[in-house]
Image (cartoon, rainbow, N blue to C red; front, side):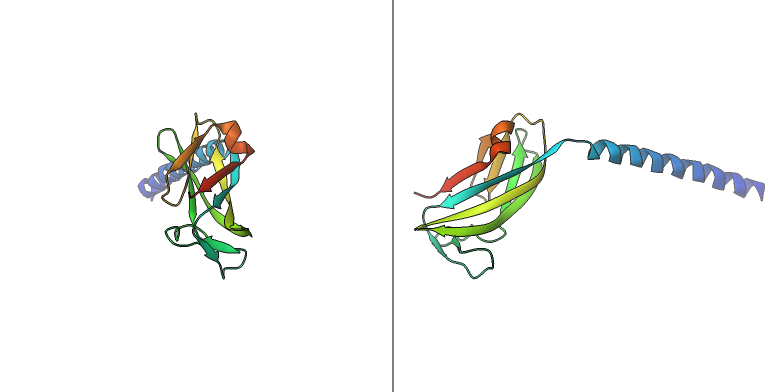
Amino acid sequence: FWPGFSVVAVSSKKNGALIATGSLVADRVASVPLFEIGGTVTLVDGSTHSNTPGFECEGDRGYDDIAPATAVRVTAETGKLLAEGSLTRSVREGDFCTFFFTVPDVPRGATFYDVEISYRGSISFDENEARSGVHLTLGR
């Protein structure tokens, strides 16, 4: 009885230590200051009507990848993915189609933030620019 009991007691102490350590790590990760990058991308070429609710238009004729729920990625200067969001809605403005996007939970403190929509290449912003809102144009 006693040898088995001591193993259980040691095992319980190890589990308690792991739980406490995990809690400390979770508290540290949760305390990283975050912000949200919001913005627009205006498609000046190749758009068409959209049947998706919340989207008046979407990409067409070579811009088919610019559509509802297209990924918007934010990476740091190291190339590390920091956060990901998506295109959330679009409006028709004459011949142009403007998409809105939000990328939540972006960690603060990077030297610069590369914002990329679909596979179209990234544009760099410092933190103040990124926090103020990102406005991009695609086409022509």
